[in-house]
Length: 155
Image 1 (cartoon, rainbow, N blue to C red):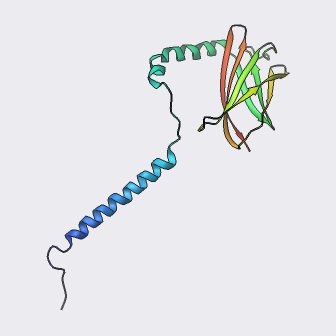
Image 2 (tube, rainbow, N blue to C red):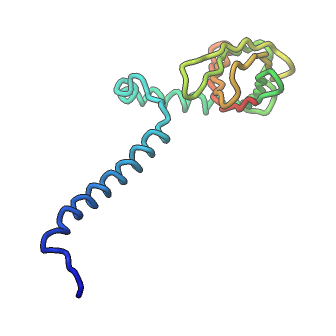
Image 3 (cartoon, helix red, strand yellow):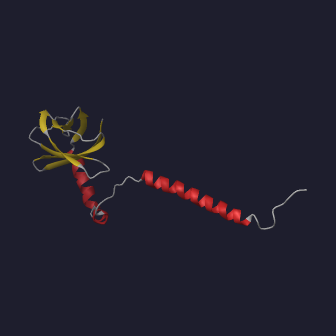
């Protein structure tokens, strides 16, 4: 003799199973949201969007200048190498100002660059925490200005 479930007894289990699926999907989505958010936002996004033409004009001005730069890490220093459009090193009368900043934090370290070689500048820095840092540099020479950003990893 087989026993069968009385009619309608399975209906509450359908609801329990449905809620179980909802809870499982929510757990996956919450985990993905919490572990993938970079934490970076753009301050004044609306104003930046309205003046995006200025951003494009500045990029074109820098491209027409033709300077090429490379930022690297050498031991406890940040090193910058700059070349003019013809490939010659940028003269030492250019000034370099910059900072190191954490991509996900509001921490910034000022960099004080000194000429190290033709077309080269060096800034000693003590990194308080290892990991990824972004070098944000501005090079000026007379009326010319060149901006450079580079991601560096410190051990």
